Length: 258
Image (cartoon, rainbow, N blue to C red; front, side, top):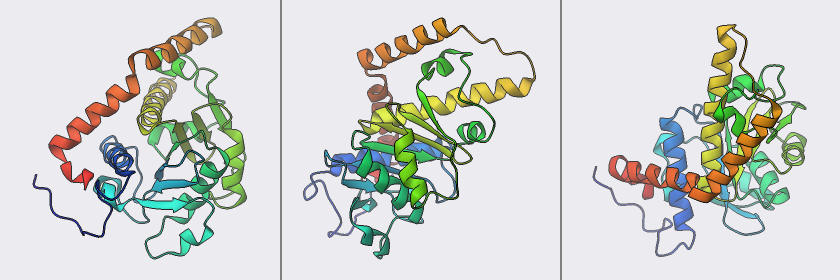
């Protein structure tokens, strides 16, 4: 594939100190589309480029995940309410949810919100989380937050409430809505989103069989969850996965870097 030129006024590696973050976030959008974690031109990913979370990158309104480029991501101020009024603006719910998260939960540097199929199914049934039936579901044992206060689309008070329900976890099941994954890096957050959707797929599919579930004890589930955490940090699982995502895209869709 030939990489076409872009407008010289656009952010570039030479004039934007956050361009690598742009590349990584664009890669997350492209791979999310490949994995069918997206929905129409809705859903939104963001990454805070400032330590206090106030300045963050996010996708512009009306763009499909599969077409987004690094230079096209918006750089917004979480405290600037006029961001929603600019010509090149974010989706209203994206602004509400992500500006609230970056204002109130600065440790969540990367915030990925999706309506992925199986996580959304889980958010739509009377369940407090995932029962520990395989290694992937055990990864999230007692490590998922659940918001049960859905009161309409993610605007205003709805967005602010979400920031109080995540706690120290990296996954928030947004009841009657979808899922949010957060992390200190784009790679870590994407790994959480990917594995949570896989865990939900196994769990929902198991429920669909109508057969009794082979649920392990709390002790085994907690042991496995801790082993997961040790493994993730020791080998850099999320970073290794994300590096391969960039390798694939560099070979097949290199224009994501533009």
